Image (tube, rainbow, N blue to C red; front, side, top):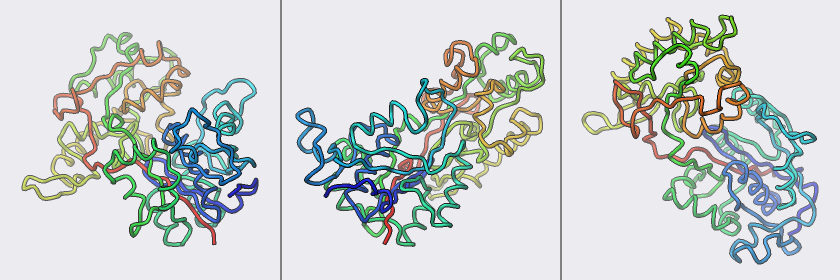
Length: 404
């Protein structure tokens, strides 16, 4: 089958940000699978993806590609335009590049014949979710987009998602299949309904799960403070950072510990969640865990969680926590704007934030941060412990939308 330049008028593709689904639909299943490939490159950071294109599609891989992956890497003769929403950041691009036309989009176009156009753009996950809900309600959907599990099931029940079961089996690259197979079937199960595959899960490595406390080393040095070892130490440092003008600008503009508006993460940990504080009490909110008798109990209502909440309420009252966190669109703006010097980040989150760290003027980038965490995810009240998800569920999904 040969794709045409107007494929975006016939195909819709859904996806997920923190915990959710992406999808690409039919008519034009092969075009949809090829579009799924484009987003898989961004979402999974893979070199292999889904492809199609039929008898007239170019074989871009030639002799360097495993014969089993020739279809996965085939390039369209006629360019395909994919309209997707975009959650942007303030990363500076080289002169002449734009969010739609840059070295990544150009490489993607050269390799697959797919060009990316943004249907709409938002600066944060909160605004993205709101805009996505409006798009679903209005029926004005981009060709590809990110949704959570609830939205995924809603679109499936409305008949908006294409069945990708056969497409996945025929066109998935060996690399993509190996990643999904590594989850023991759990990942694809998350994207399946009644035994049929309607999405492509975004699988995150377990190294993304632990939460660590990160502290500005330059601010510690300036105020003569030692690295934290206990929860009391954390509170003392946060108070000092808030009250002692550690950035030296002569203004009372630094805050306590930044907090995500959700406070804790469920399926997947992330930056500025308070999972680490709860873990120090042996508490795991928003998760089903084994109780003392071995039976499942909900972590949010256990005694340990209530003890952690008492401490956090005190921290909030004293300004140890950012007292405006419920009003902020993106808590990570505080780090980027040089307003906070102690925060809970995942290891991967810290690495991905290095650009913002440098742009905020931190001395030495991440070298100006100090990780203060309990060893190996051990849960000890006296230490800042890492937090590991007990659910074992994949970290997100991609799925495909079809119009009748």
